[in-house]
Image (cartoon, rainbow, N blue to C red; front, side, top):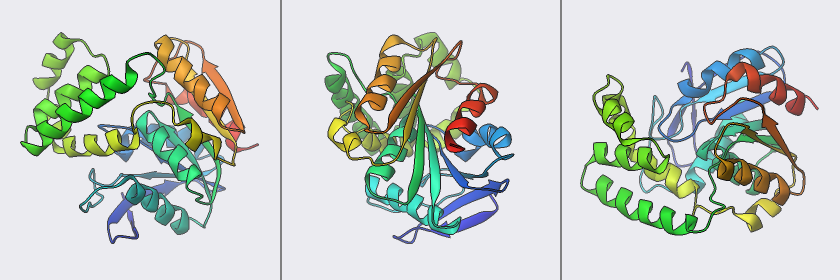
Length: 259
């Protein structure tokens, strides 16, 4: 990241931008940095000024206690100001929840696109989120970062043998490094349910996208977002899962952001 902006609470937020045109800010999800969404910036930069940033508490950005979702909204406000005072937002997974909250908070956002925000639409979803929150809070309070990562991977439905394989992989130390930020994404997700009243207050166009090969509940959640936002639209990408391919997603975003 070659640039820095200062958020309202004094936290330094690292970012970089490529291309020229209307600004589009990419918001990463849990257990990720700006580098995770950077491949998407390449096909978008032909039409837009694409901004990739490290959310607070990860990568090259700073952090400050106590955490609140409002601080991350202020981080986006600082980024928008730094790139000209207006931007569109794209958020993936829990980063999509943050992008939607930023729009609902009244930031100068033109449009919002989100990919598979994992809101629960199934019975027991709120209970599952509450149990995860309790266990995650305890693990982080005890300094058990590896256990916190395992809790998150289990929440995503990853098989136990794959989790154990991840623990032995070279990427595991990096995952433990940003494990405290799992609490941030958990806070962004609220009680885990679709925040219908909050979404209904969004006054800009919203595109909610899901992959046709993702679990049914995830596709239903994406549809619920589109149906709840007054200016919402739903798109399904054939053959895609939660790990969406940038070259498949990019044309859909170019069409939406360019409209």
